Every structure is written in C-alpha cells, then in structure tokens.
Image 1 (cartoon, rainbow, N blue to C red):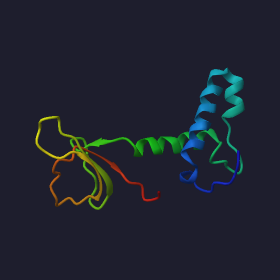
Image 2 (tube, helix red, strand yellow):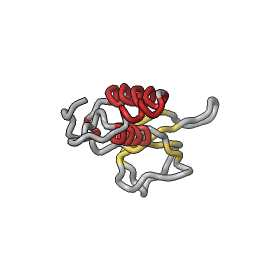
Image 3 (cartoon, helix red, strand yellow):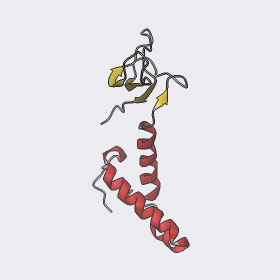
Image 4 (cartoon, rainbow, N blue to C red):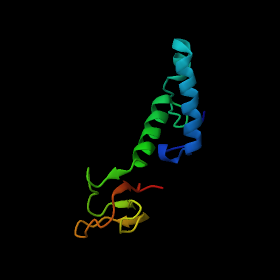
Length: 120
C-alpha cells in the first residue's frame, strides 16, 4: 500500500498481478474478505485500491488483445504492432512488426494488430 504512483499506467505489472491475486483470495473468504480488501482510499492508492487495480489491469489486457483486420482496422496514423500468419505451405511472410497505420497502403499479409499505447 502506497501513494508512490501518481498515474495508474506507472504501477508495475507484477505489482498489479500480486494485488489481483490478493483480491481473488479475498473473494473466496466471503463477506469479511471482501469488506477487508474492497474499499477506496483517500488519497487513492493506485497499487492497492481494488477498483483502480482491476481497471488498470483491464486496460492492459485489452491493449494486449490481438484484433483481426477482418473485424476492425486501425485508425489512420495509429501506432500499432502488426502480425501476419500464413499456414505452412502458403506463400507470404509472417512475423511481427511496429508501424504507423496508413489507410492509403494495402493491408498486405497482416492478419491481426494491437495498438501501441502512447505512454510506455
């Protein structure tokens, strides 16, 4: 428990994971466990308050979920990581790369993508 983080995106992932484990255990302990762990602090503790920890973990999971180009294409100018997969024996490249999306360029072999957050 601390106030050393001023922004949720600065809390290390391993700290969030440890706290998520604690929250999962609290849920199994019934009402007492939930009351003990699920509360909001003033000032907020970004590495401890359940609502903030769960919210930040959700954002990170979403940013790591590959999106099919058939479902949705990136916005023009968006920073992305592209992925191309070709079945064995099919022509074409496969791999992972960073790029800035340009609507005027063809998709090529890219099959999936994820956004690159502005803040890393």
